[in-house]
Length: 280
Length: 252
Image (cartoon, rainbow over all chains, first blue to last red; front, top):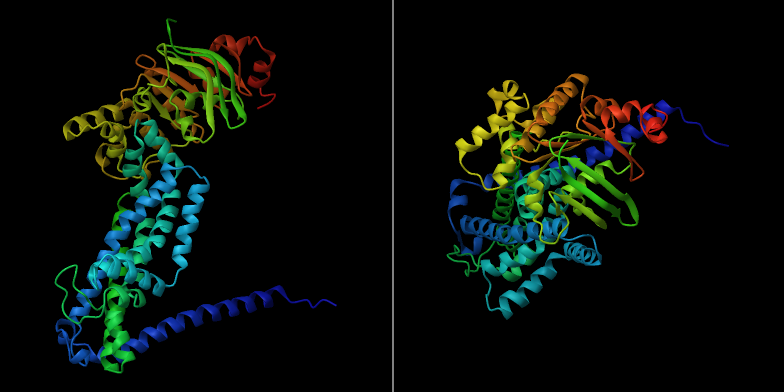
């Protein structure tokens, strides 16, 4: 015998369950944020942000790790963006769908699934040891760049693919070359999507620990060149917490890390909105 | 009418295994408006896109026979596709303004060709907008987005955009299919004026539009040219019964 459920009851039930799921997700997110901020904010002062760590991080601030984090992330994005966007342009505009493009795409997707510690090991073997770059911003930046490359390729590809074909036809029919069409019509239209990929990449590299600890090292000194070893905020947090140096400073570092990520995301979306609103 | 400037000689076009145009023999005379009518899938658009080689963009596209503009084969190995497309301005079925300002849309072709002088561009843009009767409507907001214009205005903008190329030919692919009667009327009015300066090929789903605007009309069916003659002749006494059936609305 079949049990009949009143459609209105069913509707209410489904709504309640889905609301619960969503609520739980949001709750966990806010719980983490609030917990970290409550533990971390009391430690934060101007001195905490502007002074270098002292006594292995037990005292002093975290200035050098903020600089290290920003420098490393910037480096990774500056290396990965042109490579990634370039590959995406090649895959979408300059080749037709063949087994070669499918192999490239499959390869880059596999790359996206590799655990970051494997990237760290790879970076250590290739950049730090083999190429003799040592533990440095450059080794770390290159490693992170390879790590975020697949994300940037994939999102850029999607963004470029979603530019209406008619835009390309218009550009070609007005005597545009392929390169002009790509640079003047396709890329500007795809920019918001490409930026999403780059922002995801920034998010991933800024919080990365495993790949960085192997390649950029953990020096507490303020980095002075691309070849300086440097400690990022996440590595600093890891070491402070792991070795029980100072839980208070660890939470302070975590809170600042979260604030920086939030600020970067807000700034990026703000810039993007201004660009997009101009002509839409 | 005088000399033919476009001439198809035994021209066929294929998309993969599908033959979209079959052994086409057709002439287009200088400074005429040639209307092309026919049901969907009859090869009208393929013919236009073969002329400016937009078909090249589609994988598996190839052609046979000759398609000449001023005696030169458009598919000849040495032909510069960029030069070719600048000679043949094309307007599409749905207006496709680029997501830029009105000014930049009209100036787009000239910028692609390397024009940089702001004054020169301003003059060109104003001139082309006047020719399409859009100037009075948009002169105060040239820097606002072209996407904010109405459909009819957008299509006239697209016309202005190809006039800025200073083309010899204007190819229109069902340019008024999405427009209201008033916008359609405005565009048809402009097309009649264009005849003095340009050679126009007007592909249309609306047979009455061909009757109103075209000097000669060609009827395509399943990739074949059924007949081409003066518009008056085609619409009053077509030589092929299929033309008559199509015009009188028995199919298509």
